[in-house]
Amino acid sequence: MTEPHLFGAACGVYVRIVRLTLAEKGVEYRLIELEGLDDLLSGRVSEHHPFGRIPSFDHDGFRLYETSAITRYIDEAFAGPALQPSSPRGRARMHQIISLLDNYVYETLVWDIFVERIRAAFEGRQPDELRISAALPLAETCLDQLVDLMADGPFLAGERLTLADLHAAPMMIYAHMATEGALLMRQRPALQAWLRRISRRSSIGDTRTPLELLAWHAATAAPAPARPLA
Image (tube, rainbow, N blue to C red; front, side):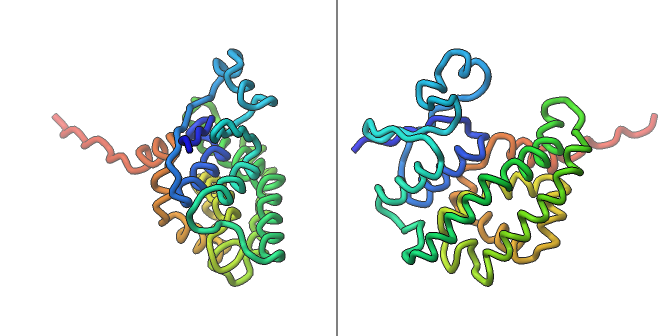
């Protein structure tokens, strides 16, 4: 069986979801970087995804796109710990959380808050403060729903790690990098504890995104020593 190929950008939320799943299953794979206007214009992205998006996945000639389809395939096709609940209700709850993340959380916490507060600085532009402010009420609703669905479990869909946690982690890590996102997390101790717990996993450390690393280095860089007055 050949090594799976994952096509996409290392900085992408959905690419990282797949990378986390592969890491948790202990699967060796090759990441083939596809990003930016050049790859879109050259048709490299659409060679693997008919709608020109990332990620896409190839395993022994079996090609997949759509992140949830890819991660479920990885969980079921490879050895390693099961990443889906065994009960119908558990799986339903997992899929509900993933759907909430895709349909509401990603746009709000990543694009409206993280991109405007954090990525804008690396792009050399001012954040859109109105967009950030407008996103906060929906962001609060999203996080409240995650807390409610989590109930008392240490993980989002129960007592053990599932695809729901791996789907949420890249979004929450990016959101937490923004001041607004960090505050929203602190106001929800259960979710804050979950983020600390998930962030300690080796799969998270092994898949740090370039933008995450840049922001960390910028935040921890020691200031230059002051020059003595002449």
